[in-house]
Length: 261
Image (cartoon, rainbow, N blue to C red; front, side, top):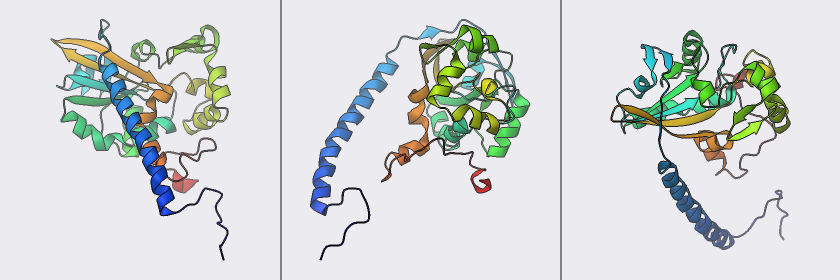
């Protein structure tokens, strides 16, 4: 007598599973090869000389963009959402940054420096970094045009009147566009950052890469929004879990807040 399975998911024999798995393996290999091709295309993008002089505050003192390389020829910048009026860093950026400690040392020993950059003053960054238990480099761009120039920091006028350029498209007004895409997000995460939704949304996430050659710094690549998916370590694991991301809204918190929920 057969017992009815309690799950609504397809249930099969080991042979059926293996046949389906081998079909999927072909697609996974094609996806991997396509990913390799895209990586090469990223590397083939023309470099743009960085003409503007930026000044950052770091735990080692004032620094120019070239100083953030710390002797390496390549620099990866994570544009961390932590505005001057935030009380704490963005929970989403924090979930991404939780993986930085582990691999930053490997990158640093492969001629690549990883550094987070935020508009919050250095004192706030240092306090939050200590709270999170992070050791990777994190610089403050407070008072600099760096975030604005790389499309991750905006003024109130840009947000409410002029519109902003983000992820290579025009968003006008920004707050309305993002609220439609993530209706619960701005208010929930703004509250978690100790601010209001409009202020929270004057920062947006991204990553940019730079290279230094012949004493000259060049901008090589930037990505935003879903382009950051590959940096979310937890999502790479969830995509391989039986139920996938299994999301219904914004479920994550900072790693030190789960026990308080």
